[in-house]
Length: 289
Image (cartoon, rainbow, N blue to C red):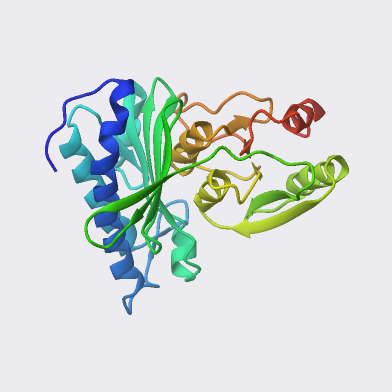
């Protein structure tokens, strides 16, 4: 991958092609481990979350590739060393990545895992890419500029289609995407409110940032999250949603911001695919937090 000079926000689409190729390489490494006899082997990190060889392989590929893309932009990964996590408070623009989002899904063979890459500038995601290694499909969002889905053709090229902003239709079910692993009373309260304020509500559970991909392609309308979640789990999805007319906000309606505190955990949030629909303003006013 050749060196690219630091570019302005309006030039961000130039980075899509090399990022896609980088995700292909990292995705192939993940799939190699996924199909290996030792795929279920892992170590436990300090927070008891699992760490696999696939996480480490993807991290190494992505970190090296992003540095070669532009050495002036630092990289913060879920697998970064503690020094990088400490120094990131000094960074204005940086890559925020999760080399394998959904490690537990990887271990349980559900296939619901992604590679997340976001470019953060002044505390907000200005570009996001979500890659599905098993499907070899990428979703890319640059708010205000680009929202596209790319499929690996298998011959080194990519086919591309535009992502059309989803619209919430009153005669169709409202599809709630929820975490496969995190439930609780607050989620149930939110679901009950929706059922009182929308004719038909359906729920689909799935793991990882895959939920943002479903929302971007019109197969999910709402993703509420009250359980702890890290910034690298969300930033790429937020950029994708904002690029397709959606939003990811805190429970009072403020867009999520990044690298604003010593903690890398995000607050509870709502993700909406049709961000302008009046239903969401009513939900925020209900103050379910």
